[in-house]
Image 1 (cartoon, rainbow, N blue to C red):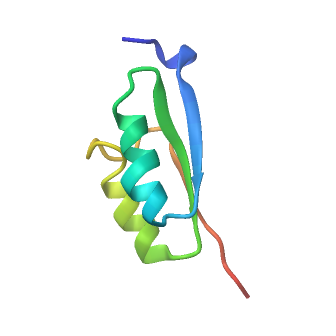
Image 2 (image 1 turned 180 degrees about the vertical axis):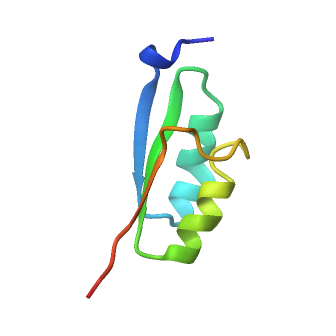
Length: 71
């Protein structure tokens, strides 16, 4: 397996269908990539996606979850 220092780290902006059904599962199928950040305006969706990221491994220790507020 690839060491942490050599992994490609992705940030997903928006938690829509393409992110959930294509991109995030694709990250989970690799050995050289990890989901580093989730950005969404929906706090409930952020919590749900963080618990079930890429391949149900849960968030990595270095993963950031950013909730965007629209005030």
